[in-house]
Every structure is written in C-alpha cells, then in structure tokens.
Length: 173
Image (cartoon, rainbow, N blue to C red; front, side):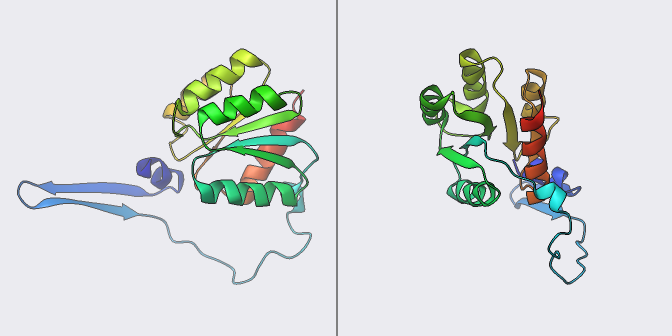
C-alpha cells in the first residue's frame, strides 16, 4: 500500500537491509510548491461540480468515510457508507434503486473490495463503480478496471480529481 501511495505521488521508495543490523526504508517525494493563497471563489469550480445522485462509499478508514461524506454532501450528493464488503452488499441490496454510484476501496475487511465488487456486479451488471485505492492502477486496480470498473482514483486523492471522476462516471450513459 505504501508503495502505491508513493508511486501515485511520483516518488521513490528504497529499502536498505543488513543482516543483524536491521532494515530501513527511505521515501523520496517531489517537493510541493504552493502559491501561498487559497483558491479564489469561482476558480476551478467546473471540477467541483456536484449533483443530487446517491453514492455508496465503502472504506474501512473512518477518516476517509467522514471526509468523503463531507465532501460529497457539500456538493449535493446523498451518501451511504459501509466499512466492509458485507455491509456494502447489505446496503446495496436494500437501496439498489437509489444508489447511482459505488465508491469502493479495494482493501477492506471481510470479503475484501475485489469480492465485494464482483458481488455488486452479480446483483447489477450495470452498476457504476469507482475504485479508490492506495494501490497503483497497475496493481489490483488494473484487474477491477479490466472487469468493468468505471474509474480509478489513487489514495491519497486530490479532492478536485475525485469529484471530477465521480461526475464523469455519473454522466456516462
């Protein structure tokens, strides 16, 4: 997972290991240059376009769920949450007619994200699913994309990128 996050941020991770001395990991990330001011109102608002659809957010990390709910509800979406695959499936079965998009982490307790993804598609082969993962798109995310996921966003995610991916998927026919 760490490797995926580091690579998503265009960084490098090196491992040094010596017998009887231990192991050390060094992580190198590119410097972030900031302009020193917050985004002005109206600047980039096209990326922050929301809607009135309903989203099921599945992630075992409380912080990610809380951030996701706040972010998505602030732009108009209704949000259900689940912490594991079994809970996600139960909610999806109950609310399938209302759920327009599932945002799914691949690493969740219980059955896991991949199995949850497969089970949702058994219930509804046209389900719109956005994978959000700390893994690289070239890892487990690639399998989900090949199986029909509508999009992939790497963790940690950029808010504008996530909202744009959500809107793009929801707008697909």
